[in-house]
Length: 284
Image (cartoon, rainbow, N blue to C red; front, top):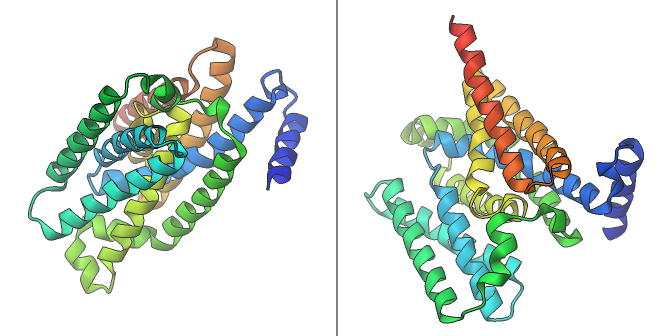
């Protein structure tokens, strides 16, 4: 797999004879961001439909605690981040299905609990914050082969699930009871969606960091929702926005010497405001 990644990166350098593409770390960053950006947007569509925008914040901050646990116990932080994030995500879904509390309330409890646990761990072991820097702010330029492979398989899983379940997920968002009467196994799909979303959040942290991961997932989907006229257009507008914004942000960050994740999010935000302008022209 490493040889394949190197071959693809070499191909990128051959077909894109630009200064920024002459660096191996930029070619790897481009490959990573092409894989994770559209996948994040695809999941963001359903996050908005399910009114779960706060969910990614809860998972990203639980990932912060997972990273701290990994560093504390001398485990791979990526593994503990994913494991703890999955645990929190599944707990949120489980409580939602067994409780009459709103999803925002449950997510809020999970969010505050995971953040508090992370702060306790960090405050008890001074010096841990030095190792958390790249996760808090993101560092796509340091993404390795293992993470690119994980992003590839996750992207395949996300798009396979989305293409197969897109209409069912939309139906669940509109009316879960109607979806059940149509034979949709809402519990199973909700668990699968939460697992995939958690994995997307965790791997996206390596690109844009804990502080901005929600924006990478939500903003392209918000652009798609603004410009689209039907659910089909919503998907393609969202994914295309994420793809263009991710590539543009990466290139701009190289020439501006700015943080890549933050630059990508700013480009996404620029697309969002342009979409609002276009929508205004349509109504005029």
